[in-house]
Image 1: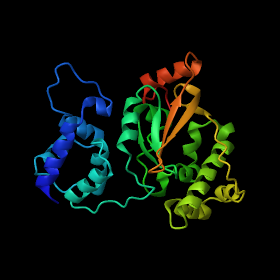
Image 2 (image 1 turned 90 degrees about the horizontal axis):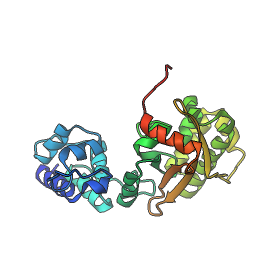
Image 3 (image 1 turned 45 degrees about the horizontal axis):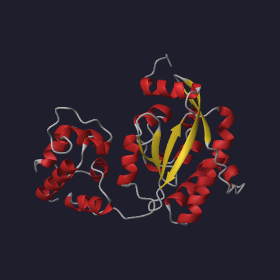
Image 4 (image 1 turned 45 degrees about the vertical axis):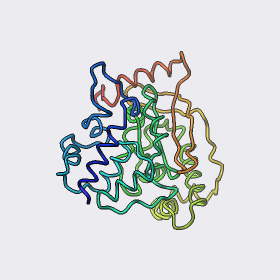
Length: 280
């Protein structure tokens, strides 16, 4: 770990970012060059004190998870991300099509989507980052570890993961998730993350084995998706998907038709957030 160079690199990248770059509002009395330390810490999900110590050349060696979070918070491109890992004393992650690193341009688009749910997912359905509206709609999907990071893995191993969709849509959603996994496994090959998920689900889920055996390769995507929210009830939203051809990641954006009842519910979702207003 090169504390001096790490501190300088963090500081220069922090000062190069502006509030508008991360989707926040610039205050009238703002004098700080770039972002404040507490703003970077919040974006990376760590304490301000911990981040400050890194910039002051007196912090402990950050873990690979912390370095990855800092790379995303500072909107680093891949060469900058690799450099940050090396300064922190870690090997740079392999640049694979399934990389967890979100491209700065995609992250900037997500930062500006404040009034509608949006998130970035991999080809195996692992959610890399969500905006607050997506967390309110779908729950926090970024806190899972291991194979459970994958939506399709949770679909077949955790029944509660299906609760965000109407029961009548479960066969459709399960078929789509399975077809997406089949496509990812065929593209990435037998040593891929997708192939690992297939092998695990084949062992663990009789339902998956039945659906997988149908060899359905048509993902049957519908632009309109139905959801069930515990506080505001059913919603019907349009899902737009933006593909990053370099990483294979997709930015999913959920919107409602202007003036519709669903648009009113979506606006209410922005107010309710993750609060629970009713007794479980």
